[in-house]
Length: 162
Image (cartoon, rainbow, N blue to C red; front, side):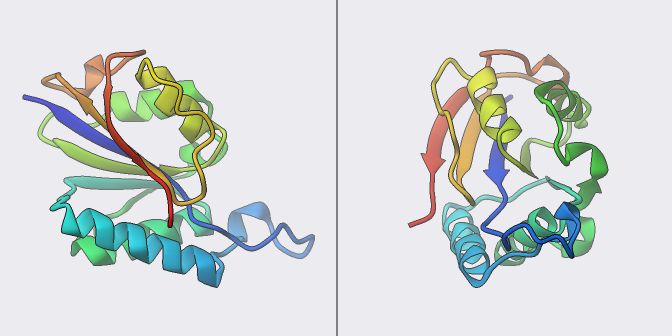
């Protein structure tokens, strides 16, 4: 059995503004377009997630919702986590290790630099700085998520917006 994890960096958001908390920044038109294109790409690739988990930041939630709509995954089933906002790798890894074994394909939407660092950490590759709305698909030859650790994932592909 194997597990597949899609690490996704949220799409392009409004510039920081002193009137808004960072958590409240929303996607731009370009961000919504890129998230929609990523969702269509994943749908055309027959991606059927068992779980979508996202940071609770508006821009990450919006990214997750747009992708979920393209995948026909109920937006009400998206799990939001305040722990994923500005999370270090150890928190992201703890989140992944807590996924239940029956979930074989999971999408995790987060923020840089941690999401890119995590991709590097879980593979032996230099993925470096993921672009906005980029995704890295990782496969693990494991029976459960508790064994996901440093360099035991294989990158299937990296995709950035067009």
